[in-house]
Amino acid sequence: MRLPFTLTESSVLAVIPARFASTRFPGKPLADLAGRSMLEHVYRRASAASRVHGTVVATDDDRIAEAVAGFGGAAIMTRADHPSGTDRIAEAIAALPCRLVVNVQGDEPLVEPAAIDAAIAPMLDDPTIEMCTLSRPLADVDEFTSPHVVKVITDLRGRALYFSRAPIPGHPNGAAGAQDCWNSGSSAAHIGLYVYRRDVLLKLAGLPQVPLEEVERLEQLRALAHGIGIHVVRTLHHSVGVDTPADLERVRQLMMASSRT
Image 1 (cartoon, rainbow, N blue to C red):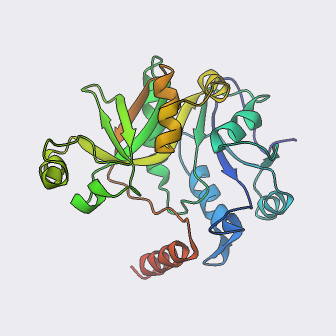
Image 2 (image 1 turned 30 degrees about the vertical axis):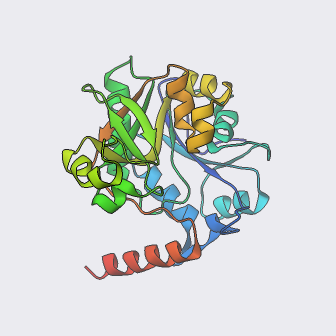
């Protein structure tokens, strides 16, 4: 397809993977939020990042592609059998020139353009960084122990050592030591936004899954297991993911509150 912007080998391209089918929330990308689809909110926020040269949606559904065209965005059709958003993005960019690819989750309508820029910046400054992602401080010990909040721990250079749904680091006293581990500030909550070098993304999509990835249900562990380094940028930004209609209502209320301030 013809894109409404020009890409070169030095461009930064944001890609939003989006599928219509969802077990818990069918049609989630097109759910209404303040008169716009959730996907449109994500698209506009990604496009507002100053370091992004273009934004596209990667989808296998005509309804999503039509909706994107309706708000003036660009969509690329992909196969329907991709096991993850990373694989879908890899297909979408395979024939496109760019330097960096930003994987922006389509179910985070409150993602901050500044947070996207913060994840891109180290990749522009340091050519040895292969991937970059974001983290934020854990709000409390309940987040630290929650399997619904992915934790990340890094080395002294800010490179990810491990991601887990379990509390990391662990404590000899198990759950009784959770407060001490949280107080240490050693781990942070992971924010699922990724920046890849184009060749690294294409390589990653072609690598087999690993046991850790399957056990934790975290595809970023595939990169670590295969020796691909992930730089982690700390931010205070706290996005809200939408997995269910209840989450959507929560975001709707946050938007309403923000518009009144």
